[in-house]
Length: 306
Image 1 (cartoon, rainbow, N blue to C red):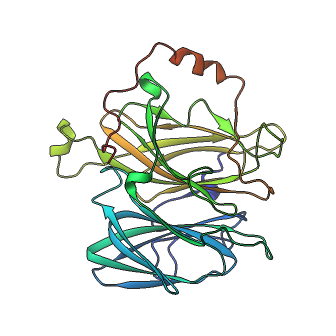
Image 2: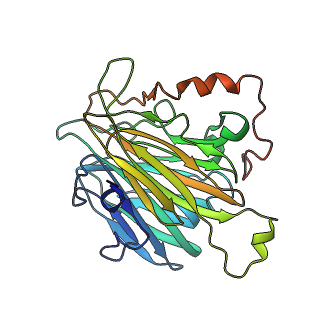
């Protein structure tokens, strides 16, 4: 039986308190991670107060001023998630923050993760990571090529438990592939992390459909479980939709021909070590070996690496 009704949040279905999207501890079955998305008019301000959570501010479009106490960062942002990497700001737990759109309207994602009471926050507790500092990885090859912007992973951004990145998959390609999972603590092999997928989709520039006045860009996401922990999701996703992955194998994320697919990943878990360790579904892991000798899709990086 499909679990789409439980773990797929269509755009607008999780709006709350003036936010377009809120995933947090009030979301049924959700414990460790959070994601809020808001559209702001020029000069409009929004407060964020969650002292038990650390936050990472990611402009989806437009520019935003982030303030927390005496600290402030002006994020130049971008025209859209497909335009290239963005600068981000990290704010440690125990600190309130505010967002103000600057220079025009903005859409902003605020990633969060629960931190353990008593833990010392990372140093520095407020950090602005410039777009030029974001490592851009071209992962996979052939039809499994995708662009990964690793602004919030271990080794790039210090945090307590939060891990975040964004992935762009050009039309016709598959990402989050081979299917993999990270829902058990196995030292050196796998870490327990729940995961949020926030999607945006666009008509590929220059395609015939881009001239259609009513295009319907769409992608697909698969999540499936084990015999002990079943889950069954096969979701049609559009801009603003979310798929929650509490456990199980997830992938592929599919970009049909004609439509480029973007997703923002937010991960955290209960383990003492902040690490992103995955294991492939043994039925499909062999696919990685087929990438040898194949070129990375020449359309990548889709938005350039600035």
